[in-house]
Image 1 (cartoon, one colour):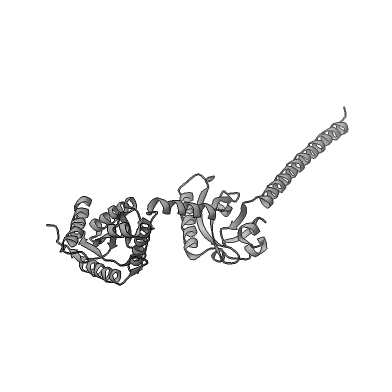
Image 2 (image 1 turned 90 degrees about the horizontal axis):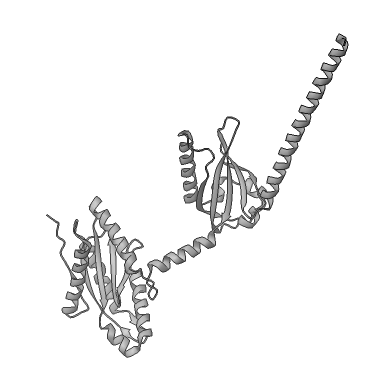
Length: 333
């Protein structure tokens, strides 16, 4: 074979190899394009909302059409909004904190494929609030640096409301709506620990409706139940949201007053007694109650505290009912 023929064959082999390389590249590109089309098709028809947010600008760069069902806005309208326009300030604060934690984990060499789930309140287009579960992961550049967030969002409002309803049933007295004894004990132990650590005062009021058996015997238990509910309403109007009102049993109630001294608690008990004296209950008329009031003493036990306030309430019963009896606060030696 002459040199010209050898060169011709070599050239043919190079051309053939190049053609194969081009064919392989085209096949890979077509595969990638087909894969991208499939993923976009999935995203566009998913019931969940898929989105991408640029980390540098915190702006949406892609939002799937299902955003309309979730938020009531089009993808274009959503992408035109800043992150502060789609969620309340407290939710934005949670998100920014989560991102800071993720970036810190990233710098510490955590698994780059991990995801994070966060449930927050967000705005719909009409500014109503819904609960959204967001599953977040990072999209990376060629050097594996996070450049965007890939998010999957779904509406969990119904689940949250059901969970809240179940939680409320677990901690409240079904008859009166006041907290139950179990919840009160949990909060009492928490408040005792806080008082022991930081020397913050708190006080208890125990009250018992006077002659409640007469109410049940004369007017029936249904009327008695309505009286208990009315009493809870009366007390709730006069205590703070941080105070804990619980039905202790029967017609007996406990109020835990955070950051409250004995004189302050006594003042409230006297105000409740006066309010009760002027509160006319349907069918029954006016009622009174007996009150025991005490302040927590440093490092004392739960039993000691509860026994003291219970004894004070019964002392009020023994002194003629419709009165407030309290224990002077003593500092433990």
